[in-house]
Amino acid sequence: MKMRTLLSSVAAGAVAMGVISTTGATQNYSDHTVVLHYAEYITDPSSDEMGGIEFLQRDTGNGQLTGDFVFGDPRNAQFDDGGASVSYGINMLNTSSDARLLNQIADMQTAVDVWDGQNCSDMQLDPVSINSNTPGVVELFFQGGGIQLIQQADATQMGFYSAAEFPYFAANPNVLGVAFTLSWVDGDGNLTDIDNNGKSDVAFREIYYNDEFEWADDGTEGTQPDGIRYFDFPTVAIHEHGHGFSMAHFGLIARKNGNLVAHPRAIMNAIYGGTLREPTGRDEGSHCSNWAQWPNN
Image (cartoon, rainbow, N blue to C red):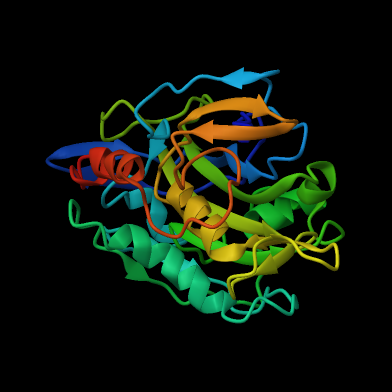
């Protein structure tokens, strides 16, 4: 299940943006900085993790996160390609050695394509080449390095990390994958909304996968005769990139026979429910309610 953690009290490095003129008005964003805002994650349903709710999570909301990208955000030019549309990247080096995980880079690309392929929207996605030798912004943060704005896509899959490599997974061992949102704040530390759409302005997102689990993409699912329990990686990657593209969790969560279950069954449930590689109607509705309006999300 998810835990939506507010992290905006974390100080970020100063950003010098200068004076930007838009639609005849002059805006000075020189004191705006980026903070680690919140995390959305999917968990092993056999865990006791309930995201702060003991036995039940009700199905509420429209399936959209409270923050979103700003079309043509001038502040983002310092770390992305400067394009007005949404960009994505994949780290090619942080891979898993799990034997049943055969096409993990292609799986990460598919996680992008599944959402980009929805007919209701034109996300105008742009691929960005990521320097795979460069640590992620969130990775550096958890290593005590603060927020360092390096070359970055709007949504980047950083790949697989062990608990030893990524302290977040050591502290949250039931998390299969996690998407971190980094947002803009003004000089007073308040979340910004420069496009006045009622949502906080997302700078970028990073996605990490927990290599402490056994992963597969060859159709192997669940506990095998040798006792090893496998999780379907494409299912989790599609879920996490749903968060990367501003989708929230939905579905009623309850406990049945000691495990968590979700209704309705969907990719964007807060718990992993087995292989599901195609969006359900509810997933599509959640995505389209946001992206059909792009760039006015």
